[in-house]
View (cartoon, rainbow, N blue to C red):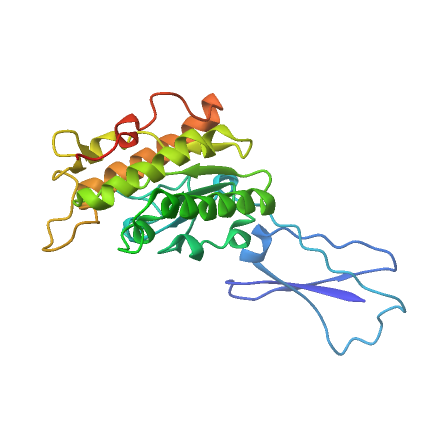
Length: 266
């Protein structure tokens, strides 16, 4: 068989032919394909009997070792991947998975990521049908099951859990604080090895026990969402959690989001 190598982008388009004997190996690099076209003539009937194998070895970009899945509700919506202000940066590639409620978390979808960041539950807790501690506990059990399934499908990833952010509603916040207490006191203490995302204390106005006006959306009747500044703080907190875990290897300490663990005003 004959392999032809033709230089591209030149005036003469020179073609070089190489004779390939039985059990021979022809090697080319990816870089060479930018300058040469490698091919075998289809009409060539001189192929020896047997099987011809074509193997492609691909190099994985260094940043893929930090691939990240953002699993969350609408407050994750403005977060984008890539390079630039307010983005996760070149060193953190990945995808965002829209999960408005806890039941929408699909653990099998994140099996190939190195980092999985989860923030879900606001839309579950804001429902008027959620009134008692038992309702909140049932939602948390579903949430914990989802996290355990993420760990089952991806045993080597790092799972980062964001606390549910406060809102402008005392009634919803009461349920959110109770849910976050379950995350901190149970989920972060079990053997699922989750990392609790710190740095979100400033989202809570300690005087009113509501979402702080400095980070809250100013749209009329919007009690749930962050403004641009709030999103930037959230991005910085996620990045610090991801890169901090690589350096320290720690999971959770007593300082984590302590302000969100207290109940709302009576």
